[in-house]
Every structure is written in structure tokens, then in C-alpha cells.
Length: 226
Image (cartoon, rainbow, N blue to C red; front, side, top):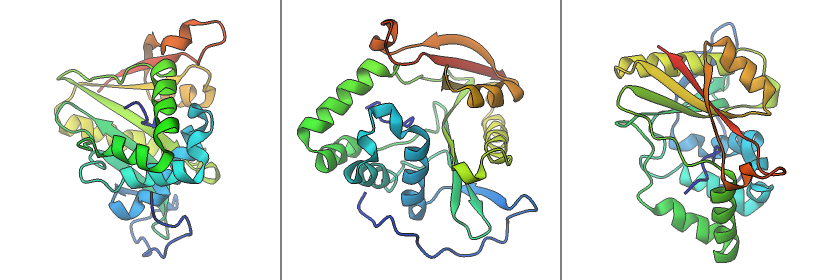
């Protein structure tokens, strides 16, 4: 399924958080995502990518779906969160390799049908298939970064750069020699960030509608040597 914002049953009310002693002078720290972060991750992904599906995922059922899939066993593999001094997630990003990748064992699709209903779920699947390129499959020497999102109040404060740097280090620890990611060609701020980190454009990928004059935006495939 292509709903990886780029792609829920708990309340969206803020939950009590344990203070984070690891936050440095920048006011944030990084740590692996946990199941208790699922609601905050859903909010971050919807803030960053919810518009990609015609706003459907911004509805209450859509948010529940995003939250629920991030409580599945194996779904958080490779996912990092940036947290503030109160240990609240303010940013998220993930890393996939052939060996390390999220797993849902088919439960994700079932949750989509449960939350959105059969008709809307099928339409969302169709929209994703038409507008999004197929999921990139990293080769044995590659890592792939996905779902980089930072809440608006923390942008331009080094959070995304810290997440990228940490994932680059993690990719090296896995023995990878290069890393790739994708970004919408019209997302100029993200493109500038990735260029600043040494990424170069190596390809353009589109969904089926991307080839039409008024189709979905082209995705840039960007590459960096580690």
C-alpha cells in the first residue's frame, strides 16, 4: 500500500510526558520512536503530508488509521523522533534498508478498511497508485530515508538536519555506502535542505497522473554518498 506519508484509536488530547534530560542547548534530542509516540507521529505526518491524499487523511478516521498503524509490531523499525524538553515528538524521520524496514504483516490494509470503510479505502488506494511513484526499493549498498516531517513551530531550528545526520550515521553503521530519498519537486524548502546536506538529483519519478499536464507533482530522487 502506498500510504507512507509519505504516508488510530487513542485520543488526540496531549498525553503526559516524562521530562527529557537528553535535550541539549538546542532544546531537542533524538531517540528511537516508541508505540507511545504513535499519536504524535500521526499528527506530524498529517501536518507534513496529509494534503497528498486530497485531505482525506485529515479526517478523524484518517488520523486514527495513521496512529493505529504506528502501534503495530515492527512498524517503527528504523524510525527516529526529535523530542522537546518535555519528551514530546516535534519531528520524525525513518530509514529503510533491505535488512531494516517497517513491517505490518498485512494489518495496515485491514486497519485502513476498518477506519475509512471499503469505498473510501479503495478510492484512497487508487489515488495513491495514480499519483505516487512505486515505493523505492534500496539495493544492498543503499539506505533510503522517508517521512521527514517537523512541526511548524520547530522548523528552521536544526531539527530536520539533526534527523538527517543521525540517519546518515545509522546507515553507515549498517555498512551502507549511499543514501537516497524522494521529495516533491515543488517543495523548495525541502529541496534546499537536502542539497545543503550533499544530496544531488539522480532521477525523476511520477505516478501515472504525473505524466499529465495537470497531474500530481513530480518526485525528485536524490542521492548522497556516505
